[in-house]
Every structure is written in C-alpha cells, then in structure tokens.
Amino acid sequence: MRIRLHDLLADAAGRSGGAPAVTYREDTRTYAELWGDVQAAGAGLRRLGLARGDRVAVYLDKRIETVTAIFATSAAGGAFVPVNPVLRARQVAYILADCDVRYLVTTAERLEALRAELEQVKSLERVILVGGAAAGATDGTRYSVVSWEDFSAGHDLSASPAIDVDMAAIFYTSGSTGKPKGVVLSHRNLLAGAESVSQYLEMTAADVVLAALPLSFDAGFSQLTTSFAVGAHVILVNYLLPRDVVRMCARHRVTGLTCVPPLWIQLVEQPWPPEVGRQLRYFANTGGRMPKTTLDRLRSIFPAARPYLMYGLTEAFRSTYLDPAEVDRRPDSIGKAIPNAEILVVRPDGTGCDAGEEGELVHRGALVAMGYWNDPERTAERFRPIPGTEGALSPELAVWSGDSVVRDEEGFLYFVGRADEMIKTSGYRVSPTEVEEVAYGTGLIRDAVALGVPDPRLGQRIVLVVSPAGGGDLDAAVVKARLKKELPLYMVPGEVVVRPELPRSPNGKFDRNLLRQELNA
Image 1 (tube, rainbow, N blue to C red):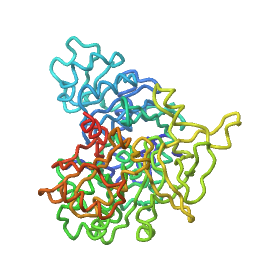
Image 2: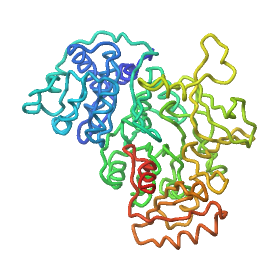
Image 3: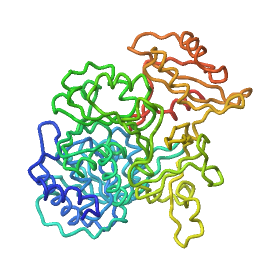
Image 4: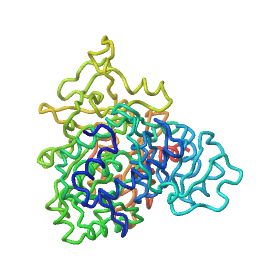
C-alpha cells in the first residue's frame, strides 16, 4: 500500500525490478537498483542523525544522485527541499535558512560558491558532497562534510516512521511580491498528484518520459512521480539549448514530454526528426497559456501525439486539464478538474458563480497543500474553508488561487488572469493573455509579455515586451499597427518594447516581476 512518497519506488522495484527507472547520460538504474540506492542513502541520513521531519536540501543538477537523495529523505522520515540549480548563492542561503535545513546535498563546486552565504544558515549541520569532498571544506565552519560515497555505503534501513499526512517536501515558489515562499506538501499530496496525473495522461510502463523541467518545479518533479507510479522510464536532461531536448527525444525514443510555454515556443523553431514526431505519444503544457500558434505548430510536428493543456499551482499541484478530444473545439479552455479534485468558481462572498460569470478558482481535494512554511498569515489568506463548511468542527481547507476564471454551460473553464496581474486601464480590466495571444497571432513575435505600468491618466498603461520571431529585426511600430487592427482601442499597448530575449525565471517561465521592475525603474 502506497502511503509515503518512497513507496512508489519500493512498489515498482517489487513489481518490475529489472525495468529501467532512470537514465542520466550513460548511466541507467533499474527500479531494483534505484530502490537499493535509496535505502542505502536513507540509512546514511539516519546515521547522521536525521530525525522525523528534518529538512534535507538537494542543490544539484539533474542526475541519479539527485533522485536518490530526494527519495532517500522520504525513506528516512525527513522532508526534502529541492533547490533549483540555477539559483545564486544568496537565494539558496535564503531558502536553507528559511526552513532550517539541517542537511545539504550538493557538489564541491557548488559548496565553494555557497561558503560565505552559508555562514547565515545557523541550522546547517552536515553537507553531503556528490563527486568527492572539497579540500578544507570544514575549515572554520559549523557544519561537517561527508562524501556521497562514504555516506551511502550500504547499511540496512529500518521502516520510515512517517504517515501519509506528514510533511514530505517543501517547494519554494516565487510570489508576485516579496521573498519566495515554501509550499509544504504531504506524502498524501505527492501520491495523489502522481496517481491523478498518470491516470489522465494514460501513462504505462512502456512510456519513456523526458524530464526537461527543473525538479524544484512541481511540474518538473511530477515527471518522476507520475513515471514511478506506473513503472515508466525517466530520462534526466540538463539542457543548455533547445536542440538538446530534440536530440534526447530522438536518442531515447521519448513518448512523453511536458514543458512550459517559453520552452515550447523555442522548441517549435527546431528541426525535429520525423521519427520523433511519430513516436511521441503525448505532449503537455503547464505554467501558463500556450499560444495557439505554438500549439498548432506542435500538432503538426507531432501528428501522433495527444496534446494536454494543463493548469495548476504549486499549492495544489495540478488543478485542471483539457481532454485532447476537446482541443479543436475549445483550444482556449483550461479544461475541467483532474481526477480526485473539485474546482469551484466563486464570487468574493464565497457563493458559486453562474455559467459565464467571472469568479475566483478554488481547488479542493487531496492535492491541497499543507500551507506555507513558517508563514501563518499568508497561509490563512490562501488556504481557507470551502464555502458551506465554515461552521464545521474541522472545516475542510481549500486553495483560493487568486486566479480569475469563467465556466461555460458545459462546465469547461477559461482562464481570465491573475488578480495581481490584471491590467486596470481607462476603467477596464484587461487580461495580459488576451493581448499576448493577439501578438503571437501576428506571426512576428516569438515571446510576448503584456504588463500594466502606473499612469497618472489611465491608472495603468499597457506595455508589451516582445522578442522577434526567427531572431531577426522587429519594428515596434509595425507590431503596434497590427495590434490596432485586432484589438479594441483600450487594449492596444501604449508602448511596444522589442528585446532580443525575454528574461525567464528559474522555472523557465517569463519573469514578469523582473520586467515590471525594469519598466517601472
């Protein structure tokens, strides 16, 4: 019976131990081998003194040891904290200090870059180095250093004391303002997400899934859990260029690929071998709306693949998906609730909205996270009782997303915008996605982000930041003229800013906050 995260591996090892579980470069581990690695590393954590609920940060690129450390933490009864490998030392130290990390798994090179900042992390006791120990790593520090090889030398691991509602992980996500917040997830959350998503993607042990997204991103980590839930094979890739993704898909005969819109936009510009297009069984989008022009190109590149358009938030993992059979009829929809979840659309007073009425998306069910780490105020704002249960002795908490959606007569949902991203101009509320979609439709644009900046007359004026399709030159006046033909006057950007590239967040999404800061400077 699966009640904790590591049970996914234990179950798969017992069911099909000889099947490939994960590959990195030339190294492939079967499920039996990976489960053995996890048990040895879990025993290592116990020997170092890990107690139930202790936080273990994993600051590595994608590799076998990254996966092993994450699942070993679960097996030992701790909570893992995946740290995006592209973060800078100060950002990493903030995360480690914020959740009182006791153990850090990283490399000698990364530790060297962190040294000065780690002096602020008072909770840190042990650093486990993958790839060898660093000379003098313990000089003048409070923490001790052990090599991965010594740490994971085989020992028996007793059963984990954790139960399904215990904390399993803390995923840090950047908010619209302020410092990153740690979303606390239980074993139940992670397992429910794995079962739900693998079910609607119709995944089987025959699937080969390319893990292109960061494992510190909930959708990236899902590539592991959904695959392990069915015994599929995961290919780890730390891509530098979009063509690396194409190459890996061809080499490993990948059948499933999930990306965020900025990466998909880059991938459609690549030459794809015909055999990849024939072997891909599904492709999925998360982390923002897929431009229709990009979706159309993907469907022509992968004619045999089923497209899954998904919506989610870290606080509830995934919330909705659009059945591939509905993509032609309603490509703008984010679909309906995933299995084992219910999605409500509510007014500010908590009452349900009618069809066609805009309201806030509220997610209830087993995927609702435990809250924000060490932040009761923000937790109380986002995790609130569902309408109608306020008087119960133990009211059920749901995630109030802050996203505006509309439900049609048939129950399909349509994303309108985030409350903190909606542009208020000339008395109108404008969704950035509406402006961006029209920009993509011109065929001139590769990347597009619409933002509202303060304006004394309009309240906010719309600024559209774009990069040119094909990497050529782009005339902002031409773009604006095209948009005037397609948009009502109040939605036409007051300014179009052309840049060669648009900044991206560590999770690969467009960095709207950075762009907003630069425009307001």
